[in-house]
Length: 482
Length: 95
Image (cartoon, rainbow over all chains, first blue to last red; front, side, top):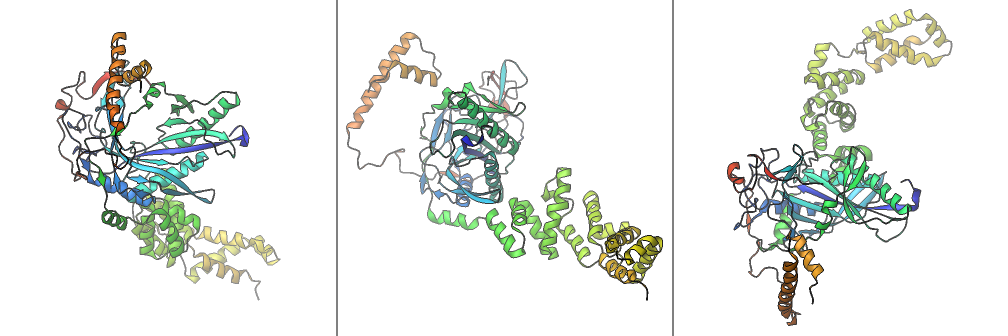
């Protein structure tokens, strides 16, 4: 923050997550991204007269499971409400949402920033429906509307204004997204808009308890943009106040190309939503037995997995956190460990070479050309001495590029480690003969040269000599004769 | 309770109604009367009455999560004032 520590930011996030149901929230149209425009609509989601919405049972299960995962209180009874506003992507003229009685109240999300653990409190989680999609490009005088998305089940997760920095906001969002993906209730695809975020940002004098006037920044749809948008909005508000002005409550849009937020005047008057109970939907009553049954179905979540990885596999806190963050990576790790029995080596390879190659290739770990079976196969070859750790690097790269297994690559490239003492001795003798000056210097007391000889031997063997054996044999041969 | 012209104008704007001066005056007056009439209800003692959002004692009407065929696009677009055969078309939305 430019103006130093005079101010602090107060950030609250609203996450909109589309639920991974087969059908929409209140009708049987398919809930699928990417279909041709307006091919997934019916009289209910088009808002035609005389139709009645009927709630999707699965959407209820998913929001309750989400609430349980975030330690929310699950309301024994909740209701739907109409949120009234006019927009072309909202055919009914209202959005079915929840107002006074959401499905989940309270809750918390544990985040770690700079090694500090913090619990970010949740305000509520409610169930609603998505709107359609407006397309503004392509014409100067018309906008086009696709209603395939209208009525898709949407869960809104609202945090308390408890976040203080853009970094905390990103850590929170990542944790929420990963948890939803663990639960398999939302695919978390920010590009396709199935996981979206609005940020409420205000500033106040550092240390104050008062809440300043907030601006709502709409649809910041990548972790990078969230960080940038919040940072530049905080700067903007500080500048306004420093110049003697006042922050006004408004909706702003982040312009990622220019790195600024801009006011959306069109939304200003729309804030009077005139909520009232949705007469077409009866109350939702959740019985305890059902909620408890869903609680028993919850998978192991990131925090529990992180603790177990550290405890069970002896991983460092950092490694355990890294590997438990995404369910796919955690599953990959555990499968590799199950097959190889080498948790630390598996962790190192996954966090190192595998992550690097996946990042370069832009691939997902679940579709990695090196499968857990293949990585375990390679770890076995290292452990039983067939290849050295160094050679393994080259083997891994070849496995990643060719999709072959480790044994195949090793055989094809002739990379089997040489552990035969006679063969290594021959190479060592050759190296000593080729470097008489260094040999004399070493024997004269320059023991640092040991590394030089190791390097020469490894080089001459094409990296294939067993390093432990090389050390042993070199030590013996470097002793002055007699 | 008195409805002001300002409130009536605000309600009209939210409902996207363009009222003439005469209609606005009339609406203000009528709204006021309607609210006054409904306000009679607050004379009742509702201390021991649960707030009612639905008058029928029914809950949990739900459907299984099964996708069914949607309308053919040509039918979905049939009632639209304007379309291009793929999308609904509306006057340009300016952000």
